[in-house]
Length: 335
Image (cartoon, rainbow, N blue to C red; front, side, top):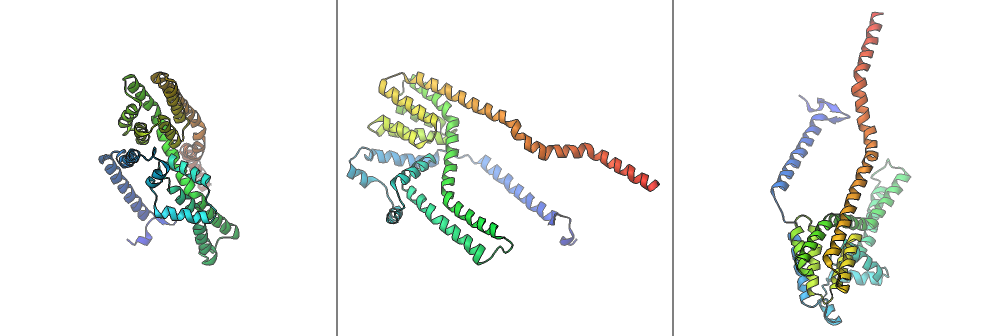
């Protein structure tokens, strides 16, 4: 049988498309089996960074003088060259660098030197992508069917993606990380209450919670483990708690940090305060789930109208329409 004479749907070979989809489905099944069989420790990749932070604190990075601190801060030649270049171009401001550094911290990227790279990418990528789009659309005329509005829109879209792309990418990672931390925070506070009532110190309690929740909530375990390290080595516990609030973009975490600082300052019972916070966070999580459930009927209206109701009409009215058509055709033939 000639492949060109095979069944076609909308101009596509049905057998070829079905074979490709079957191959993709087989690969997806193999990948699912592989991910189900191989079990990885989600905290394994973060142990190295935590050990590096521990060594930095041991060497006196946070408590040494200015000269010693400058000698211990890790800098790379590439970032230093980028920083000098951007500084000479008068496009690098310290406030801008601090904002990008905090966004990187929210995304779980603790190398502050990468802020200079992100700022440089926001300058270079619009020129690179915009120049490529201008070359392909206007000079090489790769899309001759496009009109002037579509050409200019594609060029503007390329420039916009180049400028906003790094920020959107980092913001997406930070949002996913914040959502993962929010889910595990009530359980973490319950474990902190148990550890505090058992007589553990604050740094030991944070370390214990990080070990217990590291597999279920690796992002939260990572932050708690780093907080435990800073509590052990920093000269002021308030710095460690403020660093936790700096790294996590959640009001709930800021509330926990405020509670921890107040208990350290005034000597109020830690377990009772954390228990109240845990109950509040659980109620908030339940209210958020109820809100999503209440929005579900409104969200399901559009797919119901577009996909479900037409199928029901075809199934219910289709046989009747066929019968009416056959009756009219039979009557016309009889006449």
